[in-house]
Amino acid sequence: MIHRELLLNGVFLGGPCDQGIGKEIAVSPWDGRRIGTFAEGGWAEMDAALDCATQAVDTYRKTTMAERGELLQRIGEAVTQREEELTELLVQEVGKPITAARAEVKRTALTFRLAADLARNLEPDTVDLSYDPRGANYRGEVRRRPVGPVLAIVPWNWPYNLAAHKIAPALLAGCPVILKPSTAAALCTLTLARLIHECGCPAGVVNAIASPNAIAEKAVRDPRAKFVSFTGSEAVGWRLKELVPDRKVSLELGGDASAVLCQDADLDHALPLVLNGAFAYAGQICISVQHLRVHESLVDEVVARLVPMIENLSCGDPALESTVVGPVINSSAANRIEAALASAAAGGAKILAGGQRTGNLVSPTLICDLPAGHTLACDEVFGPVLTLSTFATDAEAMGQVNAGRFGLQAGVFTASKDRAELYIEDLEVGGVVINDVPTVRFDAMPYGGVKRSGFGREGVRSAYEEMSEPLAVVRRNT
Image (cartoon, rainbow, N blue to C red; front, side, top):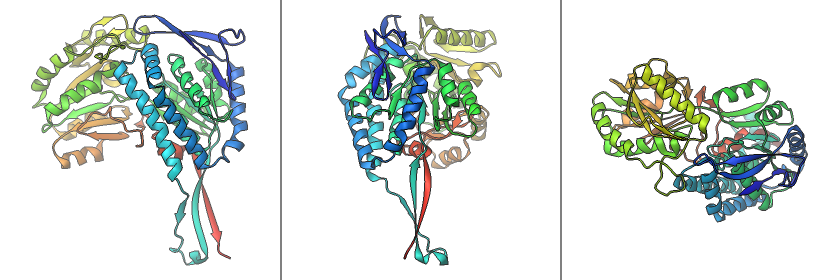
């Protein structure tokens, strides 16, 4: 078993013998085994973290890009060196299958290295002023200045890499961070914070406070948090935005991503990708494939081929290399998914594959003929459930996707470049993936949604620009 402390101004608080700070127990979602404990702070600790980050602004913002890049590079290298340890903890704490856990750790290292590369290459943007007759005696450039302390609220499903997508651009921009992990994955995120500290991060620049949600909400309202970066549920995210209408907020919220199989789709190519995109990590990814929209000419073949593929997926112990579908995060999630499937079936939906539950393991499920307005059709499932529907025309398919209140990413399978461009132009989403599933994400690219999926963009450079303000500098030649 392990124990993880809070990180405040370069000091670890809440050790096993510290009676002044509360402790919480972390258990495995797979077998309920106790795997460790972590310190959970109250307002006193969060208040101190906001103070420390505020005090660190003046010093850290004056560090050079070279110094920031060196720190980011060290962090990336340390993540790689500790890949086995970090992977094992991720498997134990959130039940992520080991192959997916290993991939997350690798991407976490890559995210910090991408920020390090940017630090080496970023230069002020020069502006040619010769377009204006007055500009002959002037030089223009645009620099970027940090917005100030960043409150980074991290979800449990990607506790390393989604933390990295907040921490790395903040460090690059010159912003101190108050990191708030999910209590469902606090061991992982607090371990990452400890690693960052051990890489020589200056005191007060990265502070990590596991806390109840009410404490985090109070921190959001605090004016010392100049930028709030939140990844999580739709309901919580929009509430947080309402609390701070006058401050910069980045929201990466829910999604119900679609994969569209056009009439010219290559099913040999598409179906294995859809299978993995829908069910890997038990569908607990914001851009997992939730809706499979199939041209009516293909639906019989798709069902005949996809059902046995689903039934043959390896499900169970996330520590096994062969496992694709592990447990959902807890019994509440399993109960919710089970109830939604039962409700859909009672309303006339047909379960074509799966639908069973054992403990926190929900078998990968393919379902069709959903009642209009059912939660599986309209809300984010965040579980191993794939809905199936048909369309007759591309316009109908795009209408189905656009009718939802979410708009994170979508995948489109087609052999036609012209058809692909049609979907790229007309889909109301933050990202379109052609001939692959919407679950594909590259960490250097802008990532985020429209409509109820949030606003603002992650991706290292995009987040760096969100966490900094442009400063126009004009020099007159003398």
